[in-house]
Length: 431
Ligand code: DOR
Image 1: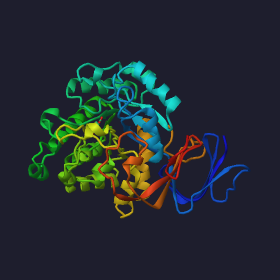
Image 2 (image 1 turned 45 degrees about the vertical axis):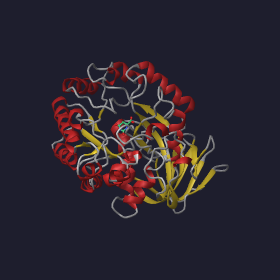
Image 3 (image 1 turned 120 degrees about the vertical axis):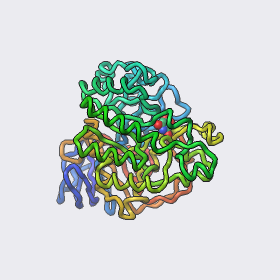
Image 4 (image 1 turned 90 degrees about the horizontal axis):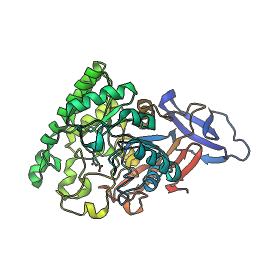
């Protein structure tokens, strides 16, 4: 493999508290050197990163790749190309496939497909319960030996608290986190957007913030009781943040994530009835959004994850009530957060990079999250000045379901390097 020399960039690596102009030398699949006066070895590919941010590769720990079973929405091939285009070097894929990833066979299938057709690293999640039915635990020991990095019924909550208790206890033996989709299905009551002023005005059935918060509270109580490791997916309310803050101050083993859409968009956007704004948990009013941003800045929420949920166009082209929940997020996530939070000065570059690289690597115990010498050569280079309009027709993802079409965003990923191989340059995925 050709050596790569990244010249003149602003290297921000929160794992080493680094923020300075440095050269990066990659040899083989490793970071060989990081320094000020390095020169490229003969024959190295030179990447000029002047004016750009060089970061450890971004890890998206919440992605739906849809394969096996829903290949009309996304495949491992298209989803990992979308990831590479979006600046991600690793994705963690959820278990709500068909069949559900609740057994060794499906996990082996995903890994094999990813090895053959994937553009970035793929880490599968195994289901908590058989068929994600929430009643009987999956074979957690088998899933652990098949190499899952976490367990989750994401897409659906584990409503039965006894199942959640046992799952936390078993997962603990294998040191696997449980990623919890916090939603009380009874309280959610078939709602399609946030319950509040906008839902009343629009005449759509609402999902109260409490539907999330009661489950966050339950999961925190069970995590404390069992000593298991819990990761709260896609938090969306101020109340969830309050509960999380209290739990963390008492030393409960808990981490949490927030999506770019919950950080940057509100339920005001639903007024067009655009089904691309329909997502679970739903977009919330601005006071919730602000609480999420603050929690991220304070490190109470440690991770940004997209919850990339691609759907086919004909599925989204229905009445709001009938369209499936989900936003295709991989290809707009990074510039959305940069445009809406980093450039206006609400979130620092290093806070963003920590939440999108260093922290997910640590929480899941996977390679990456650092540019330290000897670590895997996964690198994301961002051009903070590059401005571009979102055009979902140009997505690599099969899912064109984004509410951001036509938005001008700034701060696009310029280069993605996975294991010492350039997989994306200037928005183009390289085969
Ligand atoms: O909006 C969502 N879509 N939220 C989820 O929890 C599941 C996901 C999906 O699988 O489409």
